[in-house]
Image 1: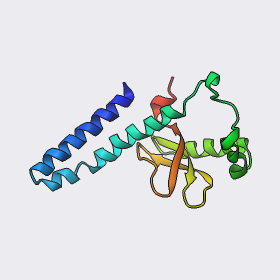
Image 2: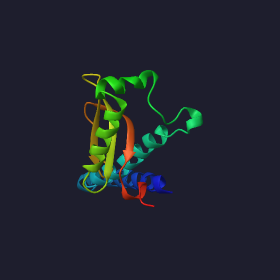
Image 3: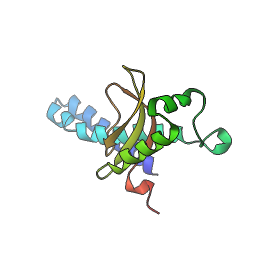
Length: 139
């Protein structure tokens, strides 16, 4: 399974780090940082992605209501949100993700993109992710 590949890669990188640190090989441990970012980010991104999915019978789809109505005020309308999301996705060079985020400082919603499996970090809390890797849209 696709998501499991990220979990396996993350576990392998963590094992390599533990083994390298036990031998005092901190250069080897540090060299695992890109794999931690890629596989750890892939695991996190997909975990959040699966949480976003819901069938219409479970209140999925459609226009936002309740707490999500803030999309209308922060983006002007749901249609504007959709257009800005499509523009953000179209701007991704290669593979990556577009995220609806909440700015932890201002409390407003926004859109950010991340390349490859880079996770959302910094002042943003990810709320909804759209996978823009080829496997997500190729038929």
